[in-house]
Structure formats: C-alpha cells, structure tokens
Image (cartoon, rainbow, N blue to C red; front, side, top):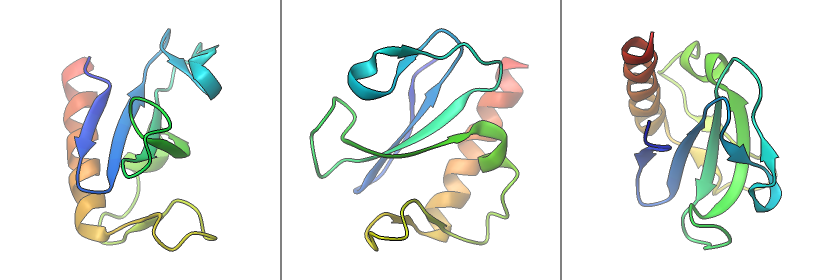
Length: 101
C-alpha cells in the first residue's frame, strides 16, 4: 500500500500499517492491528514526508464528521486541515479500508 494517501499544498497524510516504521527517525515498528494516520507539514522538510505534526488511529479519522476540519495542534493555527480537505482524506481512507478488507 502506498504510504502517502493524500497530498495538498500544506499536508501529506500517511498511513502506517502493521510492520511499517514510524516515530522519530522512523525507529519504531507499528505492531498494532489498527493502522495509524499521520499528518506532515510539507513546508518543512524534516523528513521525506515533511515535518511530523500529529498521529491518530485510522478509525478516529474515518469515523469523524466530514463537515468539519481537524485542528492537529491547537497551538499552531496553520496546523488545521480545512473541512474540504478532511472530507477528501476521509473518503480516501474509506476506499483504502474497503479495498484491504
């Protein structure tokens, strides 16, 4: 599965599946059953995906109301995914879940 599932002018959204590397310097291995969804700010090239911002369990994202945006860090206004982009992220993740089921 392609790890980057959504890109726009500000964020990369990455799915971390069981066995994938994640965390600082990608030193951790995800051993859980539920995939993780990570958000990266593409304006800052701290990693190949951008600057890590936040991580959620997949079900926390796909079970959201897609009429609302998502504040990834309340201390940084720029780290808010607008409602339209979140709706697209949710639709993309739902397709991945359906395909992999």
